[in-house]
Length: 322
Image (cartoon, rainbow, N blue to C red; front, side, top):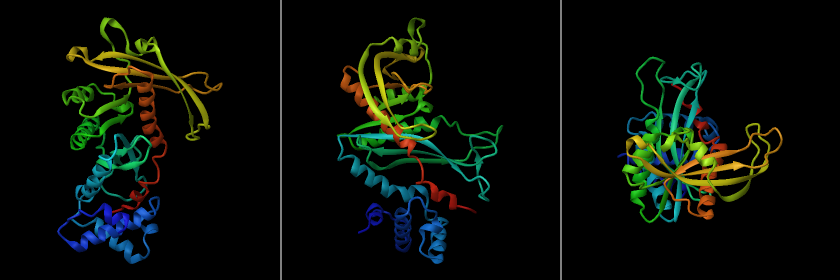
């Protein structure tokens, strides 16, 4: 049995021929994940059959993904800990005659956004995707969805996932866009069913007029860490050494207060002319030892490393033209 056949074993569209064709298409695309549909197909007939499949009204994203979600859950429940890495990707269809596109980072760019949650184990082995939300922005001035809600709803999906695999520690890991008070409030309301690890962007005001970043900068050093960063995005490969500071903080005091732990990883002695790597993180996990601090940094680096590798797998999307 091929990987695709095993992954889609529970697919049921009500049409066996459609199920079989779905497995065949997934097999072709997974054999060449960076290729377009035309490049991944063995013939013009296969290209035509693939597009016919994608336009079939019996198929929708949830129907296609449900078998994969089931397999992802099976793989995750065999792990002691899994990391749910959440991020948003731009699908740039600029200069293509594709209907229903919206503006991207720049109004002149046209495309869609994909907000997904990738599950990996602490060794960075991917286990699958458990959430996927695609949308196109409206034009400026038009009523549109509140995009910050994707992070909150994303946490809710991760919490549901954690509820289904209770013997596995599930950790929600997100970058600075997820530093939203409502997200922490929702996580607290759900009793942190999934642990959280979110990079900070807001220098929040704390009790007594103190600021979060200043408080964290004065916190005791709990550990030191060293690792190598790869070449990329105008960055040379180099070794990084960081000091780790940690302390408990109370955020959202006007809404009853939520106690979290703040962790700062600040690079010491960066190369001349190179900006020091500094990460400030918030977590519900108590950082009471060096081992916990080091573990959280390692988990955050999993998201950071996957961000650097976020290429290729969406390349097939460029073939969808109407």
